[in-house]
Image (cartoon, rainbow, N blue to C red; front, side, top):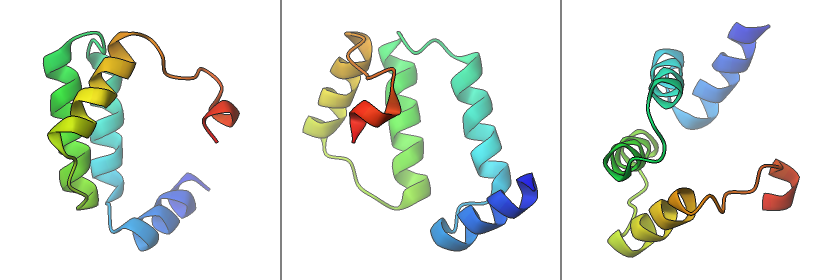
Length: 78
């Protein structure tokens, strides 16, 4: 079942399972209160998705994470 999920994600995003697992591992192992780490993750996600993130948007994302303003409940994000 997990492989089916990864296959569907790969088909829709062109992001390989190994890349997703590597990023998930990086997120678990790193301190998300460290600005440098957050910047690296944003840049990696930008590269993976092929979406450019402006400096302004990057700063806003970092500020939101560092100030612990990220919703704990995903439903609140939408």
